[in-house]
Length: 596
Image 1: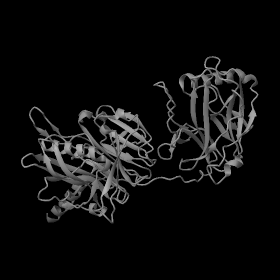
Image 2: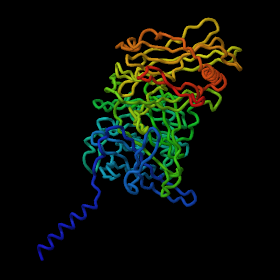
Image 3: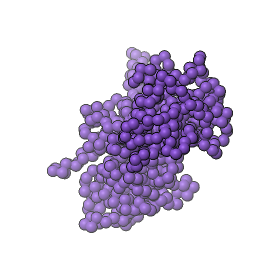
Image 4: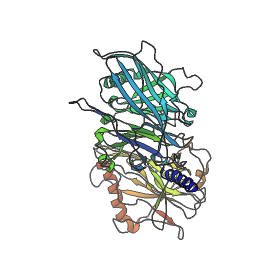
């Protein structure tokens, strides 16, 4: 009987362990991964003044290019997580859970901010309570902005905090100091009562007005028992290109940047930097970016949970702001999960495994005999009566048996490319990017269509070779490189299509007299180790005798010129690409509109 009881006890112990979820790290990413949490925020009923605390969050994996969300784990996480960050040193996610209350008498804000570790299947572990900045006897309070955070490559966690020295409710004035808190990686190794943070002062710099309004709104909301305000800084992310914390504050139309504090001199203040965004960003007023993260190409992605929208800030690699903005996705109600309320009540945060920059390799592809490649991007459009440049291209390998595409490289290639060709002589890819401009204000329109040749390395990064000189013209003649059709022979010579127009009219016939050319860039010119070349590329041009193709090419160029003049877009018909048939060494294409 005694032995039976011992055996039963052992079985019971191991039986209970089998149902427990183990705290395991995420798999070390072979390619970048992105994560987001979503959870209903706190609410106050204005009629009853009853407070409803934040509800538990759910964890998702984010597909950066599309914004598609994939749920991780079963149900919710049991706590309301924010300030999400990925630790590349241990492959766990980290975030903050807080409970914030306040009272007008005595005037103070009480906040409990607790650090959590998150592993596979959204399993969580409490690490410990974060100690806020130490305050003096005359200070009102100190608080951690627990919804903003990110981690560097060494696993240091950064978040903002504040010490309020004085606050006057009647006049809504406030005196405070801002800090950036740093929790070193070793503090996160195991659970403990208190997680120690080092606090470095933040100089407000040209962000003073924004920060004053932000901190004042935060304190007012807490003291009056309201949810935290949605305005101001909602999240930040480390930009791998400059090592600074970046964000975009929509209501103020400002890019925000902050240098990371010095490890050796933690008391040396860091200065915040707020830069007005270019024209075109104003339509984001009212957006609240609760989650931001960077991809390896320097693109910043942001989630607006209040409106269920996912944005991309393109090419934040240099200068004061990102180059362009695009709305990537609008989510369906509560991501298709009826258990969550409307977006109006959701908070979010996001994290990225990216901690460094992928740089060009300047190396060729492997021996690519039998390999096929393709590039895709959104076409140019003219929805507002003005020309919109095509979006950057993405490189894929193609399975010729079934057409299956496999993305190569991270995100896009940074440029809109065409005329893709593989060079058997050096195993690099080559393609062109163009600049299209037309002046139709005069009787004889002027079209400027420049093309530049680029070399593509095995990480799908482009390197400029030089501009391509079009066929020589005199008088009113105009000529263009039609960069969408190109290929290379075994010796690495690059062949493309070009045209010379004797005149261009503003009404039909737009291009009555023309000559088509086959352009050839000698493969030996492309072997130069120093790029870009000093001088523009000067191809050899061979006049094409169109013979039976004359009507087809006439329609093609007439459509090409009229589309540019009237619609500011490239035509969708005509010679869109061609390929060298290796058996007979001829260029082949199929023109579906003409069935030729």
